[in-house]
Length: 447
Image (tube, rainbow, N blue to C red):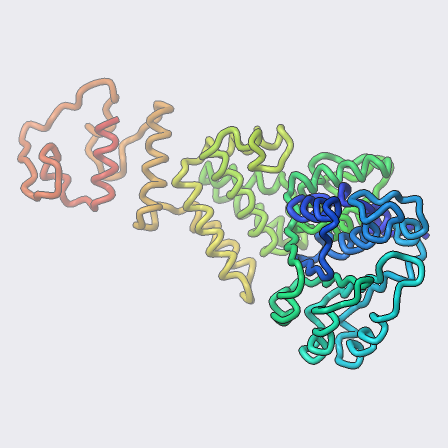
């Protein structure tokens, strides 16, 4: 029976820990300077390497050549604490979730004063330290404050604020962070290469997204995909089906339909999503993620090269074409509507209806008089003008549709507008139009 992927590739040195250089570099320097503290507090999100780093620190402290930032891996202590090793009697790892009471703390305190059997230090690693009760922490306070020379404490927790202040003040606190997507993707690709299983490049962004910055969670998802891989390896279709993400082809289709105001296609896609058994909320989440990428591409055309978007080059080219089909205001408005709709969908009893209403709002900027909707309509006019296909706005006189190169001919009777807020060149016959329709007319005349 093989070990899980995250256990098989658990780091054994600080150099192998990814995405935590702000922690591993100071710890290694402290080991070089022989200025190791008696108690440490490792905090951060789950699956980011807190307990693994605690074990590595224990190896570094008890190595025969240590304390050293690079354990030799050959001495008895290093072999005992290696991945798959039997463990060391002098390194005690305690799950505080089930041993966090005052009686457990008193027992630990009594054991702490006995000297190590084989190693240089006796090291206690308290995982999930926030689960220790206040009485338990108070029972440990004296030994953590003034421990024997042979004793070291390492507390690991996801909620450092729940560790009482008297304990925190006696430790060196190192906050761990979520691993950046680019770093995590490269690591997953390296692991898959070592496993000898082919994985499509488009799969890695899905796994990174599912892992949400946690190395352990990402490795668990990757392990599941590798376990179900066929002769062709892990494919994009297999990953989207297993992880529940929306296929990029569906997102491409609905985004193109938004740009072309093709309502029939949009609602056909919604019907396929629902009839296919997909969660409408997941579809809206994935659509919002796509609109986010398009907004960035509209603002930063080389976002792919700068690492702002994690996708293969061919996908970025497709999304760049989609961003060009929208205006910046229209993209921003669509993202705002989808984001608001996603919030409203939580707890909604009719998710399909809510999804259809969201898409209808995206395609109807003319039904809203807010500034963003007006800007979206103006962006569309500008794109049509640039393409040479400008048509007369609804309700306008035929003169508004005259070729832009020719000077418009004024009517025979024309009285300047007496309203101070309107331009003097606008005829009285147009003053009955709404403000945004007048603005559209002026843009047409200026173009």
